[in-house]
Structures are given as C-alpha cells and as structure tokens.
Length: 174
Image 1: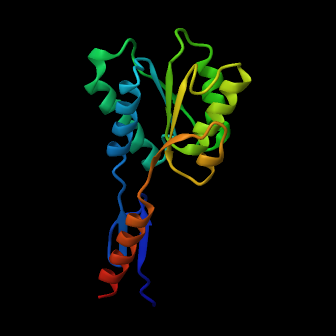
Image 2: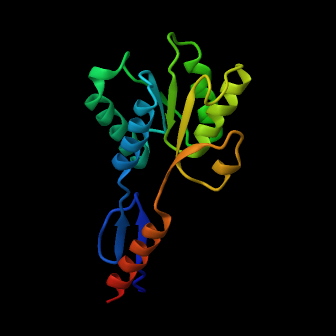
C-alpha cells in the first residue's frame, strides 16, 4: 500500500497522513455584521449555504452568535434563509425575503455566488444595491469586483490557507 498525504480544507477528519485546515468564519462574519451596523443597518438578513455541509453550519453559527451579541441594537430578529452556495440560492432566498415585512436593509450571504444571485433578484424587483439594500458576500472571488455594482465581500486569506496546507503536507511527510 502507498501512504499518501492529504490536506482537506474545512471538511476532513484529521488522522495519519491527513490534515485539515480550518477557516475562522466567525472573524469574517463578525467583520461583515459590524460593517453593516456601522452603516446604520438594524434589519440584517443572512443567506446560509446548505446546512447539511459542515462549513455552512459553521458560517451560520458564526452569524447567529454575532447577531446575539448585538441583539439589543437590532430592530428585529435576524432574517435567515438557507441557500445552496450557488447564484440560484441567493435568488431564491431574496424571492422569499421579498415576501417579508419589513424588508431587511442589508444581506450577508455565506458566499459571493449567492450574494450575486441576491443582487440580481433585488435588481429584478426594482431595488438598487446599495441605495435600497446593502449586500455583503463572503470569499472575495475574482468576479465580485467585476459585478455591477462591485460586490462588497469578505476575503478568505487564500495565500495563508495555501501556506498552511503546504506546511501540513511537509509536516506529514517528515
């Protein structure tokens, strides 16, 4: 048998020859919520990824935790919608959100694709981003800057993650 070193990103179980790089989603989600609060938003919605996925559950937990911290300054309970990490998930969440009153004034999406889908659905409904509603994504993918308007997004430290993965592989090989 061959022993092959493997490094997972946020999904694997650690074991012999297996490492797992864990992302601190709480830090990023907190930065997004605090940014929106500083802008004066008090009705904030969250579009999660599919909660059957560990990374989506961790992002969701980070959002609910930070919102509890600021609960006394919010006008409503946070709006939470489950998406699918795809643009269609953001569109479907916003379609559902548009049936709620009062509407949230800001949205945080668990990834940029859902944020872009949300922005598209908001535009279809005649709402302007960021004039009528603010949208924040998570991941900072290349297309976020090319979107119209450019998406405000929380960046994952890709170089740092890559370095950690290489270091984990080298440690495993030693």
